[in-house]
Amino acid sequence: TTLSPTLVAHLPTGLLIDGHWGPASGRATFEVTDPATAEPIFDVSDATPADAVRALDAAHAAAPAWRAVPPRERSELLRAVFVRLISRADDIAALITAEAGKPLAEARAEVVYGAEFLRWFAEQAVRADGLVRTAPSGGNKQYVSRRPVGPSLLITPWNFPIAMATRKIAPALAAGCTVVVKPSELTPMTTLLVAEIIRSEAAGRGLPTGIVNVVPSTQAGPVTEPLFDDPRLRKVSFTGSTRVGQILLTQASKNVLRSSMELGGNAPFIVFEDADLDAAVQGALVAKLRNSGQSCVAANRFLVHDAVARPFAEKFSAAVGAMVTAPGTQPGAQVGPLINEAAVEKVTDLVDDAAAHGAQVLTGGSRLDGPGHFFEPTVLTGVSADARVVTEEIFGPVAPIVAFGSDDEAIELANGTPFGLASYAYTTSLARAQRAMDEIEAGMIGINRGLVSDASAPFGGVKASGLGREGAEAGMEEYQETVYVAM
Ligand code: ADP
Image (cartoon, rainbow, N blue to C red; front, side, top):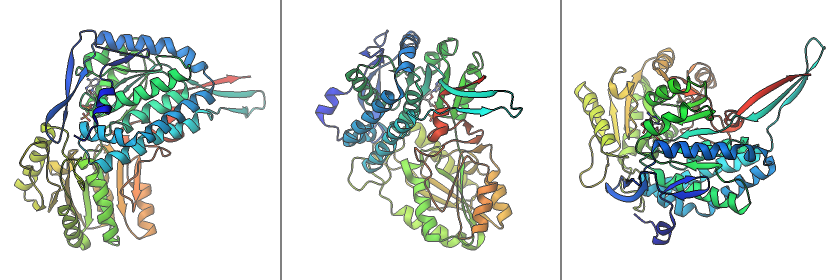
């Protein structure tokens, strides 16, 4: 890795509870590995269920003081953290690349994106508006206000180590909620560093300790489960697989917890017959290869009109074949390793299955020899709409192309999935764009764009892709109760 020894010497590797760093109660640790080498790079404290309960104790104890801090001061804390994250962007990017593998340039872009949640919610913290209305009968006034929902459990995945954490922590703090964060055991280091920056900034301002607590653990289920039985927990926000989201929703039903769920996707990328093919190829590269395809909004299926299927496939596979697959620290690297061996095996399996059912491999198709978890960026054509590589979430750098014959068929294929997170459509026709906007069953639709994420926009899905939104005004409402008073 390219981590500086000074950075490494100052990185926290323990649990953050009530403003103090310490070991796990059993003193156990676990290894974090570099996906580019498969070598261990850090030892992190492995929280136990008792540690998680201590973290909730701290979040609960800090809650009254934190919600009483004036919105302007909460806002200024978030703004100061934003400034510190940006000023340390190179360090944080190096850490993201070390534990998650993505190319340094992408890691740096993630730091900018992730830090933006602090800035955006700093701006929202002072705008927790309510309303006053005259009842339609004219008999009374209605007074509607917002309150922080209370101590919140935030469970994050490994694919965007800073952004997935800040997208939840920033609106929670802005709304006046305290939090317990359970980062992914594959990439806990970035969250620990962000938490330390928040801790020290809050301490320097004399703000309550214990507003952000972090419990990395290899036993995600056992560690978080007791919190769902505890009436002090008022909210869960989760980003990860639909399978785990369903488990958490069941657990959340016990105390009827407010729940936000950002779950799996199976994004269609539609290229209509009148699309600008060069623009579509550029958008497809971003939508498919950002983070080596390990994103819940990654294009999973390329639905391309028969009339342009061949030229699109040729241009796209040439562009994909020219991508530089290398360790994220290598200058010029464009596609980094997958997160672990299981990911490589899953992707290999999906490609082999498609090939066995008649798909042609236009470029790529196999893992790279040597250390680390690398898979070649791959384009498959002649894939049937019911192939596993089309119906399952790939989470890797593989692009299956499925041809369609009419707009109706494209929309039907796009919607033929239990998921509905992101979707993309390329067309130069306003009418086709409008139809895609109206009829694709997805929470996010990119029209002639391969990237939809933005701190100021509501990110989230429909159908099995989840509940609630992150970012935008909606992202803060997830951490607020609405209280109505009839006067
Ligand atoms: P991914 O496939 O993206 O790793 P997961 O859903 O497996 O998604 O994991 C996302 C997050 O959920 C991680 O922080 C992981 O540790 C956590 N997690 C996994 N299983 C459970 C569980 N049973 N209860 C709570 N958290 C879990």
